[in-house]
Image (tube, rainbow, N blue to C red; front, side):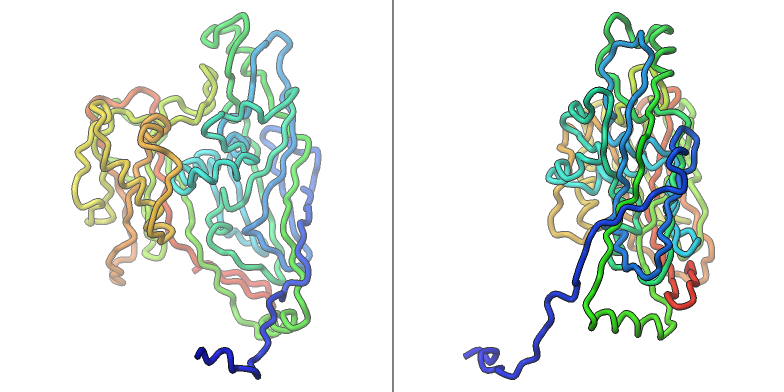
Length: 418
């Protein structure tokens, strides 16, 4: 007989330590400074509130203004809400925790590799719609949506605990042009290639009317409140470990079939754990036919990463997109979710054909490394090979994912980066 049946005097476990949980809307300092080039600052100054930033999101309302002569169907591009901003920063106690440059490209590269087909419906509020390209996202040139912070910041994806007795700040830098956030499905009475239509398209603007930071605020019972107060009174540092996303850009690849790219030099503490590489020939911002968010294969045959003298992967890919040979590229893309999230099975959001059409995204796992304390600096270099010369105006993007640990003291307000 199970002895648990006989444990009559067993201790009672409180299954509901959270007394109340609700969304609280935090406003920017200036509700009128939401135009192109403006800096939007939203702060949480209430130190008594227990907040859960991992489940918070940016709520956006806006409308599109267009010239009278432009008769075309305009919608928000895939993942277009994040393209409204050139940079996003998250701070704790006025100390930067994570900075994301080009959040549209960063979140797209990470999202294509991380999300499953089931996530597409969940993320439609964020204008993430691979299937229908946000056809019904707007009505009468007005729209609303929300960007989950875990869609943009690695801190919010990995650190899923409340923050206590600290101030927080979210800083959003609006882009100078909204072309990257829009998609033009048709043009009535003209062609996108004509100079007249190009001039009118360049005048299309996204006017934001409302930007809020909606954050879950948690109220706990007396027992949990006492535990949290003891943590604060202990004056100990609280560790926050997460994986930082850093986008490195090579703005214009030379028109050769083989190129070596010295990506970055970093410290031993923040050495790369995972790489995602993609190429984009039609750079965001062009008005030729709108920004569709589709990346380019560029006749790729092999990509190899060098961390100091160690190469990843061990064997060459030896693929050819021109000959429809990209099995190992796609296999590495599938395996990304296994080693990144420690899952037994992967559920990639892109099928093999969609991977070739919308990607490709070259995923390289370099998490297994020798921790040599004698080496202070780490050099990351990429060797890229293609069967043909890279097209003109082709940009290369490398999303470097590395470990980062910060500490904050809820008593003194001190924040450290390790």
